[in-house]
Image (tube, rainbow, N blue to C red; front, side, top):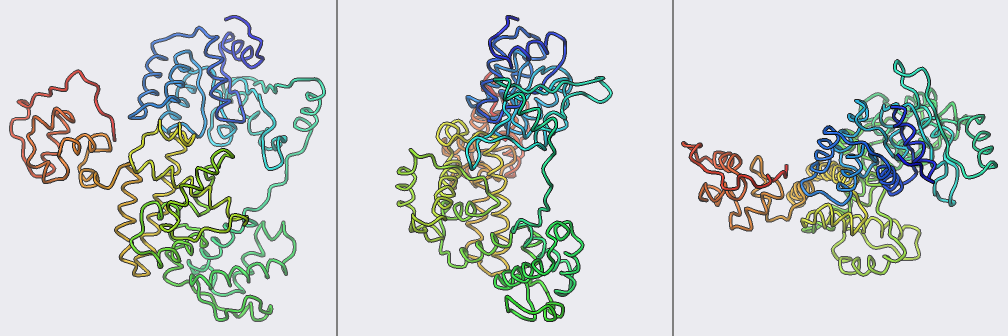
Length: 511
């Protein structure tokens, strides 16, 4: 292993040489991928186990992306990268391989330090600054402690090494002063965040834990939030405003609808959740998001998928949204103009602060709309810079919100939008056009097999029933062909006689 001019590579090579493992923390996904690739080019690790792992990682998706190929090449040399953009199966394979010693170095973003119990002999901090609202700034001390805390394995190592990379002596002194001798930041109650507070209040009322405003105030007086805030009179006013907001949404019923009342009136004010409010609480929705849904869907007439997706993307639950780059503004705005009349919310004035958020929500909607139009992960990665893992998180969140919309629509008797929401859920889950939905009812048939059947004029369950078994076997494989025939009520008597003419070809993994 030849020495490099890159300090991180040299530390990684030394770690491998002494038969240890290391986590290298980098502040961006692109940076983590490049660093892993650079290290892998300098290593000479080769084994059958690494080759097998490399193949599994590559085939984690039905259609491997360039990211999958890059990761697979790195893993062949005992190096991996790990960030939120990976598919969950890939993350699990990497984490398990690191624990059993197969992977020697993982280049990762700081999320690995907080989200996964994955200790190593060395924790290497390449980047201690991150781009934020005010440009490049130092990361929090608590985050530094999370990363350095990965160094040293209890029961396996007598010590660990936390190494921070710096360019000069002055910066080294700053790191020591700020992180080694510095104090961690204060921990703040999450109840100070409005979405959390209003969700908590609705939950307390909905569950019957508090019966009136006196109970509510008493409960909050004993919280860490109140201890930290230190001003119960101000908290009383905040709670009162929240009660007024939830009442205006028709999620709770209060004996008074005034936003500002006296302390005596506050104590006597009875609180009760409405049927709609109880369902919002059970669905764990932010009340503001739920109110957005009820308002939009009440006025919806045969909403198109892009309109429903945009409605979902306008919520806090879908953040972070895709950022609209400077060079994209004109393109996104032109696409928005094509769909403005279809959307369920009025486009804000371009000079409003809300406009930037509206445009970001629309770009995110375009990405998800491309997914349900059967664009694959590689296309989304190239077009929107959205990696498979990030795509899956957005799909899962959209599915949850879509289900919430279905439930709220039933309560509001908005039966006309329920079928559209249910179709959207299925399309989001599978990434398919509406024409494939009948075929997705068959177990073992996903987007790839459904498209192959549809393109060969097998478009629904009736067509499956009539189709020649051998033709089905040639298209989707013998076992699946027999299975779907039996699912539509056709008993295959002589299964052994069905020759799989596709034998030797790569199987379609589209579950």
